[in-house]
Length: 80
Image (cartoon, rainbow, N blue to C red; front, side, top):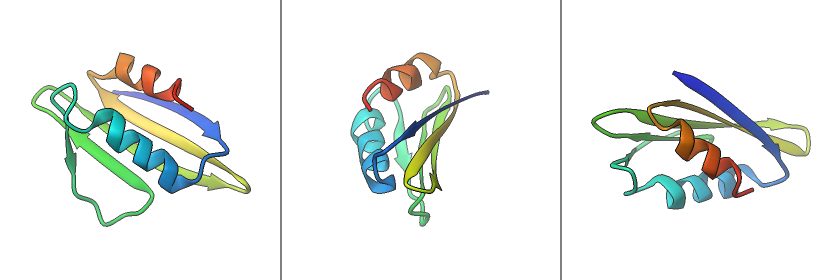
């Protein structure tokens, strides 16, 4: 499992919305339903991507954990 993160000025909802557009239906990933507004989880037969957004004052940190989707997370983090 690998963990990557990035600090940004984007709002938590904006980060999660970007992740949904970037990962949903691509790479064999399906979004898992979550009642948490700070998180998004995607899973496939071979791995997963989990996103958690942590507020740090006026900035937010997008923390992503993965198995098998390291490259895709690196590309996603370049989008903001």
